[in-house]
Length: 404
Image 1: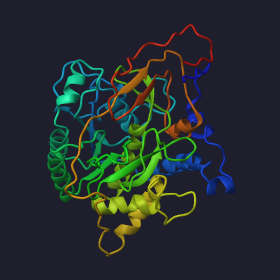
Image 2: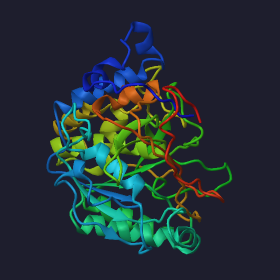
Image 3: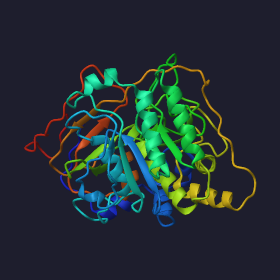
Image 4: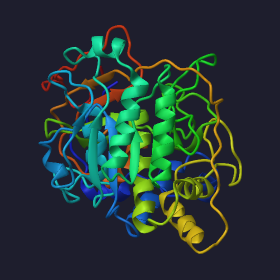
């Protein structure tokens, strides 16, 4: 469903007005999670802006001409090679992390970790792109992702966010690449996708020490359309609709696992920027120990992991870790070493929107860090479907409120 508003909310409304006040009851339950996370993000930004951190995005690529990225974007490494890539998911993620336009701009966004740098590595072709379907059916996913991880490490990445997964015989290569990254103190972050109970585990998220991210719906519960229950979930983050800037330099909105992955990656970048001496295991410990839970800290379940992402709490916990001499927590694998796996990334569904749009409550309490003028809505999944949905322009002659 698309909901069209008659006017764009001012930046100050995005920053403060969309999050309802926290009451004692909402603090204790799921109803206030979005408000609390907005406050946690804003507080974290006052401590760390991601400076001196390079984030490698292993996605469908990042468009090089996006103005909101300014000078934060390094040269892309293309491990796919198919023609005319659209680079939607990666561009939206990069713009949300380091978007350079000031708050209040009608043509850009203010990034979550605006001083970080982005190293784009294209590791998959979308099914709707020329040659994309054939590429997906024949690609050696584990090998490509392994090569992407190693390239990121060798080119100075501090954080690697992987927006794809492998479940094929090449996962031994991918596991080895992740170990290589961790020995170089590089933090690997990956989203938990939807899998059936009898599916083999997916990598990189099942590898020891990887920060697995669950996706939360606007009601504060696990989004079953995006994330399965999993013992690989460390923290959960919102997958609700948020605005960003697309490869065409126009505002879009997107949702799903890439959004949850983006918020968590930005939080990791904040921690690495402020406390670069921490190991990947310690960064994971900072996130897990600080996570907010509806029923109190110290609990773990396969729906939310340790709880909701808490960026400012992670910074506080990281500070505590730097002051203690105890050894860092050792991450343990949630899957057997000899597990075999299959592959595929996902279909992107997009609808351009020429009128100003801001959708939904949950996306916007979180996107309190974002300002925009127009919007386009994008849905992302990590598995292909037989017939990927095409993108098409919306009818701008429709009334102020419309559904489709």
